[in-house]
Length: 637
Image (tube, rainbow, N blue to C red; front, side):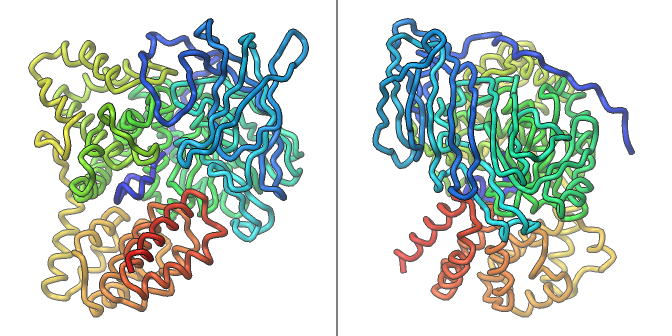
């Protein structure tokens, strides 16, 4: 998951000429792990995978737009690891459990079960008594209309305004709100699904979607590669498909599909570039689903079907590093997965590093350097305000974190910075070979930081002694702050931007139009980020008259411009600020605006009014974030 390469803060995370198309690398069956994953308790799950683990999941469910529920049966094929175990423990949140059965010969027999009281974070533990250690268990259930992992949109909240829309967001621990599961990345399983719905919507899943599928209200899916629960995904709406290549394309509403396909037309080149670096793409297809603007994140790396925010479609490809990021997850995250949220950097740090390598391969070193610089400047500003326990790449044993909080800017950007440090020390050629071997060795496994370090010691550090010390590694992985050994990046484009800003602040003379006409999004972001806490109203009006920041369609610019105008008392921007936070639900873009608004009584009033109008179209995750902020601000008045 990525809020985008241009990441501002930890709150924003709370999660980018044609060549011959390379052949896809089909995977008939998931290979067996090369090594056993050691014991690593996932504190965010009730499941007991060392006793019994789901090997395959078969869903038979109905999508009910009127009731705003998903319901039906989930049938688990089980791998009983402990032959003395007599219980199957599943994670649920706000599910109605109607019955539980176990396969007994050719029939199904009822099983006793208990649904515990709801924990506010973990949900409700579902304990199923299985004295016969059934090979298959079936749960009949229905989700809640308020399921934390689902969003239901009325037609008016969509691009086309003709049909309703529904989509899931399972990461980190929201899959349990629409399917009873062992909701931990330590369990990987194949799945199939039979889904019924109203016949005028297209249903898609993180599985083998058929680009030529016909809308008829009856759909079947299969995912032959084993995935963890947070990569389970479903969506339904007025969706059409347009291809980019033989193995990639875009699903979107009819009004959006052409723009999205044009913006993401380099996707096949991205796939080929990553394969050159790190080995074959192992998921058969890589399609993208463009969601409504209420999607709370930049993207979600659901295998075979990445979910993408429309806020990156700005017409000039300057924000398609998001596609590079979600694609990179096909190697780092989906293929080699963290074993629990406290090892989140193994997903996001590796992915942010691979993302930058893809950007460099397609768009050049300068663009990659600008993206690195923006992310790292934000990290340097943020990390000093974070609790020490959250400044380390690997969360130390005994530290309790919310599952979402474990994936902060530290996981993304400090993680990528550490890998660039290793690249510089060992050389790019050697480090690329190491990473390719790492992805192959741990393919389709969920691992810990310690497993990575053990593998790196044997396959990189010990082969090239004296290039990196153990003390340096320990500082990077378990230390606080940003190590003194962190490599720096230089950007010629940012040097020009800095010069123009400093000259304007000193003389009031705007930079030459010929210069600024050539600036890309990253330069405008850097230009605004260097302005300081406030400007005069006259300065803001001069900038606005020249560059039309107020009302911009570029969310990366808006999330920096609007907070600056709020701090500086530039009231002319207030109507567009309200429109922005009411239209967009992506947390990274709107939370900085809300955070500035709530600092004054009049701003808090505007925030509350806008939230009241926007709430029906916000995702539950976004709603929770805004509600918590408003409640805290109101209490402090």
